[in-house]
Structures are given as C-alpha cells and as structure tokens.
Length: 116
Length: 112
Image 1 (cartoon, rainbow over the protein chains, first blue to last red):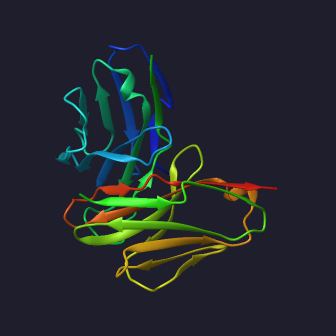
Image 2: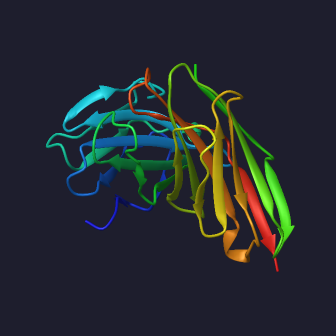
C-alpha cells in the first residue's frame, strides 16, 4: 500500500469495554511498532514485531494490553477493560528492515481513543 | 534509560522568521537521531542523522547533529503558516532494539 493505515480513526469506549485497534503496515515492511501518544506529549513505545514475532513488549503499560501480528502483516492492538487513562492516540509505524541503520519508521494516522 | 528533551516547548513566530528548535539526548548506544513533523495526524519523517557535523537540508529546513555535546538542532528559514506543527525529535539506541524514544515535541505556530 501507499502508506501505513489504521482503523478506526476514532473510537469512543465506555470504561470497562474492550477495544481492538488495527494497523496495516506498508507492504513488505518487516518491522511494526505500536506507540501511545498522550495529549501534548511525544509518542511512547509500546511494542515491536519483526514479521510475526513480538520481540519487545516492554512498553505495554499493563496486562490489559495485548498485541498480535499472526501472519506478519496486519497487526491488532487490543485493550481489555479500558480505563480513562487509556485515552490517547495509538500510533502504528512500520519499517522495511529490522535493526538496520538508516531504516526510517513510517507512521500511520493513528487511532484516537477516548474512554468515558 | 534513554532520554530526549526538546526546547522550547512552544514557539510563536511570524511568517518570514527563522526558528531554531533544540533537541538534547541521553542514549546508551547511539544509532541515529530523527526529526518528525506532526500536524494533527501521522508524524511525517524529516531527517535522520547519524554523523556529527554533517548538515542535512531539505528546502527551508535543515538539521545538524553534535554527538559530542549530545544535541541536534532543526532550523526553519523563511517560515510559512504551513510550517505550523509539532516537531518531534527521537533517538534510536543500538541496545534497545528498534524502538524510538521521543522527546515531548516543540509546538510551532507561524502567524501570517
């Protein structure tokens, strides 16, 4: 595809509801990243996939957060029992190669999650 | 833990002004420093810097890295209203997989 796409673009959830956020990376990109961006702050790393393998999930804030990329392409970030502090923009990024200097991460438009 | 600090937090200028945005960092094993522009949606890539003292330039934007003093600057000359955005600085650490550590951003507003 032309770029990274994410859906939905906006999501309003009631506290306690489960949500699933989707990311379609650029075709052929090996690496996929999820970031959380709170209002007025820079993005913060959540988790990283190389193909279907989740190599780093150190940034996931709690066990309510779960990410998968079963076929090494599309990824889903799931948040269970949402809480108000989960309200943020969730950004997905992809890059062609893993661990190579000069490989840029390209970002999707993000999903803005509001938990009421 | 890697750390990125950007200054100023926000900046208001008039069209035609020149601005300098600052980024200082602490990183265990430096791989690269990146600048992104974010306008209410996806951060868009501007520059990747890996070597000290080599200026990267794209139109009215330029950036340079100082690996000894651990900072980078992003310059925008002859600013236009379309330059209004949040500018994000991020570092890659060889010891931290492939994640980016971002600063808090500088919010630039260019007034006509």
